[in-house]
Image 1 (tube, rainbow, N blue to C red):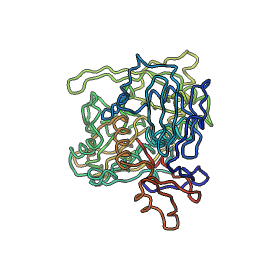
Image 2: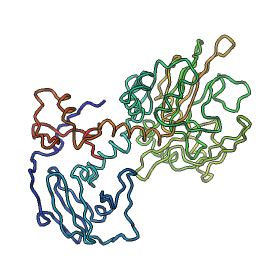
Image 3: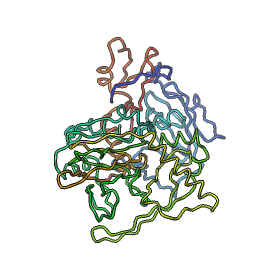
Length: 454
């Protein structure tokens, strides 16, 4: 996971090292009319708006180091700020502002936050959220990674590997979990804390005759996302298999709605459009543990952001209310699109059966899950312990682990680099604990958690 990846045809960090050179403002393109500063960092021409640079000053008067928060007084901020002088030294950029303030920026800090599409994507994939990879059922054995319970509990790298794979593919399996209803608690605590719902902090999935939830039956459980009637829907579902049925059936079904949605967008654009635009009212009404609830939320089946990227899937036949918020003529068309969506999810789904000691963990706002019917009686039962965790907590933990693995790094730790490179590739230049690749080596992919400077 942490191996260096050398990607050909990408730009090298730098082939030239500046040795104690100081560049005055005159060698930089300081275009006042454009209100930004042009500067070359590590061989790359970058532009930074004056207002952004001043707003992001890292000095103790403007930025609280331990709180990692801006403390600049914006009531006194000059929106027309400009520079008086700029000095570019070996590692840093020093700016004197028209308000008399002085800012110092590390080159790598600026590059990692620069406004080029390439660098912004690198920051997004490295720090914000790893890029997701869609899959279909035939890919499942390759994309569903398996992780050991004790290693996840005891080792940060194992925890990182599990969470990273979960975020990329939307599913990952933990094996060798102790036979205890509390074993799942330690996994959740490694992340942060559970998301409590009206079904409790945790929930037991087993056959219950007079249940308030169809998941607690032994009949077929249709493919769905959990709790679509929550505005802040649980992001991740953890299901610990304590006892698996010995009868035929009971297999898990999983499908990646990102793959299905992309397929529909290409092959059935009209139906795809309906599922992204027509709002449905999702509902759950009942009593659980003496608590009455009446949950309603409205959203399309496929929720998109401003870039037409999927942010959430809402799908549950039992929890789909009777309110379809569209005109009369669209209703029948929507039902046909809905039916096609379910059919395709079945076509591209994976079918498997967890065993005792497995914790199946999956993205609840990306994957549909279901279960085949099984026989339940006094001598043949099936019992799972479930819990939810929000993606906010998972991404937070993943970022903390990313930074922790790269603590005290300017670009790349020399010992990490040399230990991972083959001898014939150990051609680098070292200056003051910084490593620049020469032209023989290709650009190092820092999206795999190297070359961070935070």
